[in-house]
Length: 191
Ligand code: 5GP
Image (cartoon, rainbow, N blue to C red):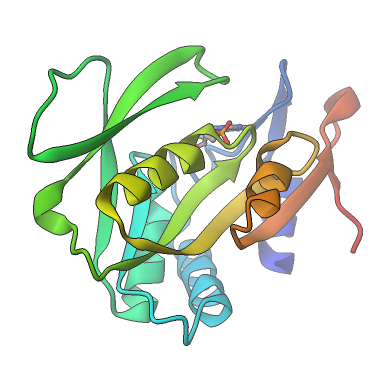
């Protein structure tokens, strides 16, 4: 998505550890016009799939997920993150390790908002090692719902998440794919 790549080029900065900082438009300050266009793009890519709900993880996935839900006229559920959580029978839960924060969070979705006939679309801001999406897949598995795929705003293609998901047969659609962040430079995958 050209507009997204231009934003990354203009405002993205590379931090140590192959982390791309995009808090000027995606996960701190948010550019609503860009989010709207991202939502429109995901809605187009996943049209006619019989999707009933959008799932994401708080907090950075919420902006693109809500715009996708708006475009597709579907409810959006964000899994909540907790440092520790006593097991609750009313929740589906999964543990997610974050390589950027070096912590494990338990994510949870209330059973109240899950229907056995659901077909979900997962949306997230980044796909790196794939832990966040794996957590959502684990919850989808527990709940017995169908999965249409994952819509990712920025895929770090040099990390294993996207490849592993595709190998498992999960459809992954990424709007920007980054080949490398070496030497503090953002290089996109050439299609
Ligand atoms: P994964 O679970 O695929 O390793 O990483 C996904 C999560 O880690 C995303 O939801 C995002 O919050 C965070 N993340 C991973 N890589 C980056 C990055 O380069 N920049 C930022 N800002 N967040 C990242």
